[in-house]
Length: 387
Ligand SMILES: [Fe+2]
Image (cartoon, rainbow, N blue to C red):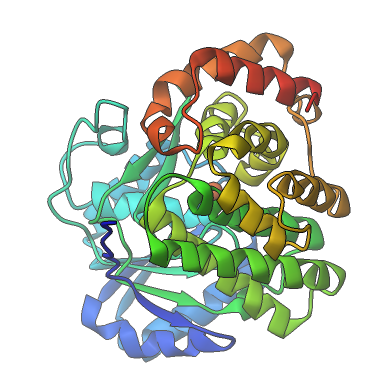
């Protein structure tokens, strides 16, 4: 019955809260570097607003690094870190979706320590190097799913090794996160559903795993109930501001839930999957794996799955969760198999092998501890769509 809570992020949340950015920036110094993705931060004026607020807050010099892609790669983190050091930036601002935030978080470590991004990722035997310090970081999400703004994880891919691993360290938290749900209004329905499903799987996996953490459980349950109620409404009307605020809240609460409790085998297989198929986005991979992993997991924690089923309106029975997920995937037209994602049959075994090696630190906390054969079976079922 032991648990602990450590989360040092100053969270500023709510519709319109971006304006408060100017009140918090001055403490971090004169020179900022803003990291953004390819398009939306510029297209929708978010970057312009953030630059203006930084200046109003007293920041004297601002540099922009644009072009972070989904499934961010280690070389890019190294490249941005070099620039941050060269420019002598006092602090970093990550403005974008999960990939941008994770990149900015990794840069806050790599630009303040020796070594390169891949030295800090969590192999089963531990990372090659540990950070001693970090560069101050402010995160401003423009999607609602990853919860990256409040947790200790940054997911990075290594295209040469075809591996996707997590930097997990208490120094990687942003100093401040400003979650203004109005910045998510530009997301189209499909991206809204995909990102919300990432938050849903954070909640489902953390709630049902074997980590004892009653605070994390509360956050996870709230995440699930918000998504059940508000995702269909926002999917229908993407301009629904109160609904956007609720989905951002679900994302952030889900981010806390995995910070306290970690994830499970859906995420454990998804990372090797999108390491081999970088064109597959994280939530697409999660959706395609979710039914088969959940079916495997049910027997390990029926009580928790019964609770999830009840929250989702499918009665107090563990199997209700399967029906609920299937109906959500159908309702939002999301992938239900690996073959739909373009995964080739000959790669399925390799994904299972990588999962067995690279994700094995998750196995003891997964509702059911999987064997290698179990993982192969789950991957084959997910490929064929055989529940
Ligand atoms: Fe995730």
